[in-house]
Image 1 (cartoon, rainbow, N blue to C red):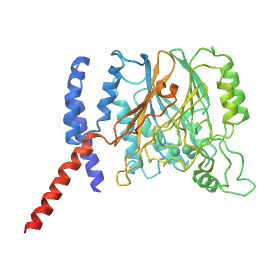
Image 2 (image 1 turned 60 degrees about the horizontal axis):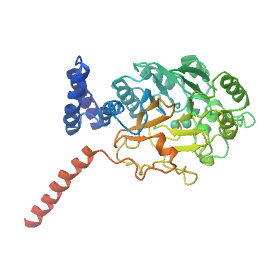
Image 3 (image 1 turned 90 degrees about the vertical axis):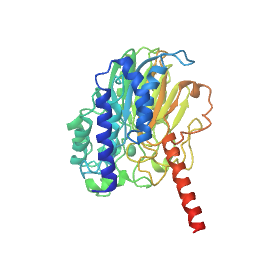
Image 4 (image 1 turned 135 degrees about the horizontal axis):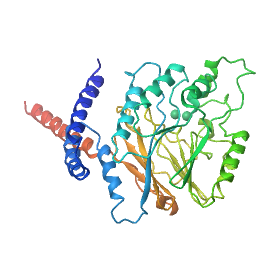
Length: 396
Ligand SMILES: [Fe+2]
Ligand SMILES: [Fe+2]
């Protein structure tokens, strides 16, 4: 067993004990205790501070503030990229960590959206492993497909496990839509590719063989029909795996028919698009549409060399020695005014919120998320110990 495995098991045991203690408290006592436990737990390295800071954030919304009150909240987990190596693989452990995070939210989110790329190479056992992990989510689960789930068998297994990839529903006056934005034009038949060759090509980031992603005409027709029955004043939240704009062509951080999809959304005054695929803090705003990228639980992509939307609150390069840095999950607050605030729950850094006001004023926040205090505090004694050691050695 590796030292990481041992640490994770040890941390889980201590974490379970901590939650056991908090279990059965009434709400007021829980809130009182959670602050004390958060400090104790962070100091002991039992739990990342954000799990408790999210609780504080929920209740911060009830105190007087400049932003409108939150009507409800949903959570997201995205881009787990599971390999068929079972529960012991580090990506599986990260997915389990995300499920624990959202299950620990109090109050629970109204639903949890999975943002696509559940699997790495669309293998049936990768998808089945993902289903097994996501079954533990307590809140209702909504699924979206990513290209890594699709191109081995063109979605057969995904649909067998999770149903249709394109659907909509209404919740508390908001119309929600899930799209499959990773449709590609056939580049495989003429080349005589096997299913695995097709999958591996699509999974590659920087190749000219595959076509660019698109929503496609049949789905745009479906979307037009779906939107025809929705009041133009109603808020819309659209989920797409790729961003519904053109960010960076060569990595397929791109939707080829983005303008045509946006045109269908423009008649609505309050539209938020939440997308996966880019594995990073990413924010954009086009006319009435706000766009927010979701974090991945598996790895963070660096920012593309060109095309980064100016509203993005940029995160520094992830620490290559910390497998969780730049990864995480998060929540979305749907406000009573129909706009959304996007909350990034990073596993190694302070939680970061992008409010609608930040988009409306058109200026990015000056700084990205910093490492949480516990990490900095740990560094100080280490440096001191090291300096003292060198100093003593110099004397000897
Ligand atoms: Fe992904
Ligand atoms: Fe993707």
